Length: 99
Image 1 (tube, rainbow, N blue to C red):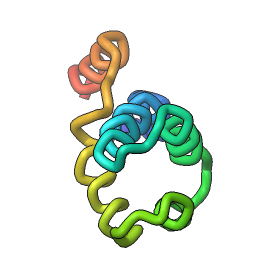
Image 2: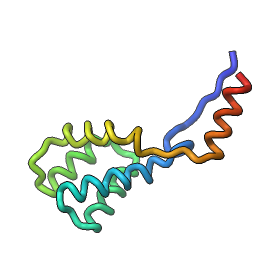
Image 3: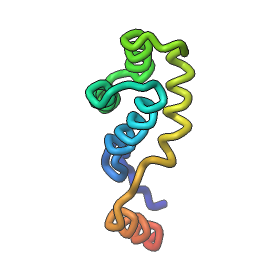
Image 4: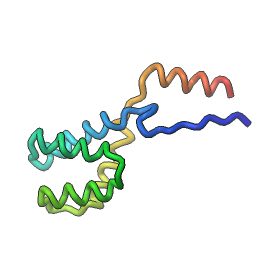
């Protein structure tokens, strides 16, 4: 049985770009400025538990919502925000075609 293993943490999809896109919407919704949005996006690209990141965001900005609600929103939106390059898509199709 053929097997291919991938590290999808930024390898085939631009997770950092998706996190920046999500952050822009989040910052706009909560009337946060560009510097705040940049800080949030940077925190989301760090290798640390996201629950911890969202707890700090809620605490820092004093938002009237729980970290779990924000994390749930982030997880729900991320699949639609990530993008795969044409070259990566082609390579995946080549793998599929090869079985």
